[in-house]
Amino acid sequence: QDNVIQSKPVMTAYEDGTATLDCTYKATSTQYPNLLWYQQKTNRSPKYMLIRLSGSSSNNEEFKERFNADLNTSSKSVPLTIKDVRVSDSAVYYCALQPTVTETHSTIRQ
Image 1 (cartoon, one colour):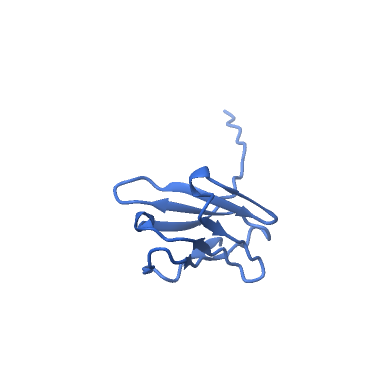
Image 2: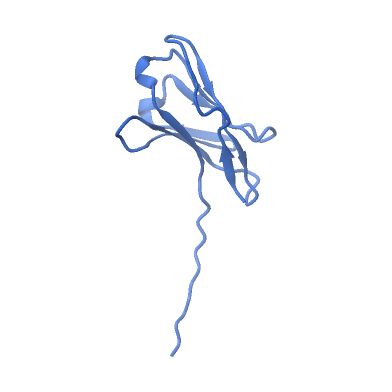
């Protein structure tokens, strides 16, 4: 079963410092998973931050400058690093595995 684990539910960081949020994954359906990070501020919907694929990556423009996550397939981790931490970075951060979409076809016969 594919899943992610964020072992530290609460983290404290200092302004202008660096914070690293951990995320490890278990992906049995693929050797090279796609992992995403989302940021959710109070009373807001989660906002897509970035995706890390084996060998490539893509960031939402809003998160390009200070946010980074490197996919490590040997340790099965994709920690999120926030540089120059700001008070406005206070939020809930979610790590997620991109779901594998499987299409099936059914035919109904009478």
